[in-house]
Length: 306
Image (cartoon, rainbow, N blue to C red; front, side, top):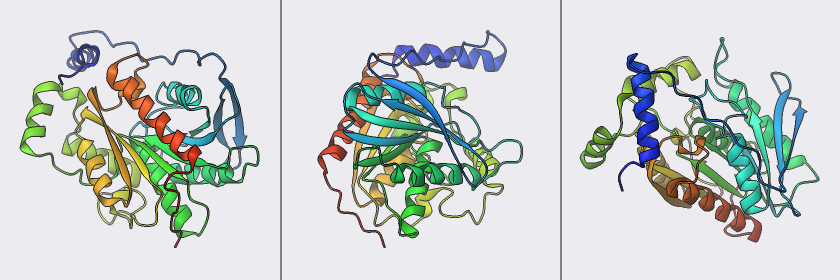
C-alpha cells in the first residue's frame, strides 16, 4: 500500500527542515501510559556504572516479561522517546506483560562498542535473576536496539547463561554492509521516501564507524547478522514496508532457525516512535503482543544453549 499520509506529511516536513525551507518539526512526545499500567524507575549496577531502567507493570498479574531497547542508530534515543516509553507501556497493557526498558549508554563523546551492548547484556543478566518477574522472559528492541537485544542473546548463549524465550525485533539493523534491495523495492523506496528518510550506503557506514570505530574486521556481536545464529529462541521480526533496512530484517529471518515476520504496510522505519493509531502501528503492536502471548504459553521454547 502507499506510504501512510501521516508519515508522508511528517517526512516531508523533516525534508523541508533539512533543506532550510521550513521550521523544525516538533519531536514526538510519548503520551501517558494506558490506564492500569504502573511505571517506575530503578537503577542496577553495570560494568560502566549504574544503568537506568524504566519498568511497566500491567494492571493484572503479569503473564510474561520483556526487556526492551529503543533505537536511534546507537547514538540517539532515550527511554523517554515513544519508541522506548510508549511501546513499553502499550505492550504492558496489550499483552499483560511486565516490561523493562533499558537506558543504555549511547555511542557519543568517545563511547563506542561494546559499551551499549555491555549495558543491555548487564540488564539481561539482572532481568533473568529478578525473582519477582514471570518465568517466561523475552528480549527485544527497535532498529539498533534490536541489534543490541540479539547480540545480548548471543552473549548469553555463548557464556552458557539463560537465553530469552523469544526475540522481539522491530525493523532490526543487523548487517554491514546493509543487504541491497532488489530493483522493485529500490524503485518503491525511491519514489516514496524523501532523502531525509533514506539509509544511504554512506549513512550506514557512518553509523557503524561511529558505533564500532571502524568498518572492517567488525566483531560479529557488534552487527550480529554476521554471527553464528543457531541455538537461539524463536524470533518475531517486524518490518517496515518503506525502509532501506527492511532487507536486513528479511535476511536475518532467513538466517535464524525460527522467525515469524510481520510487514507494517504503509509504514517507514521508526514508525513505532510515532504514538498514533495507524493500521501499520496498531498491527505492529498487536504482533508483538501476540508474540508475548506465545511466550506466556510456552510455544517453541526448546532452545539449544551450546
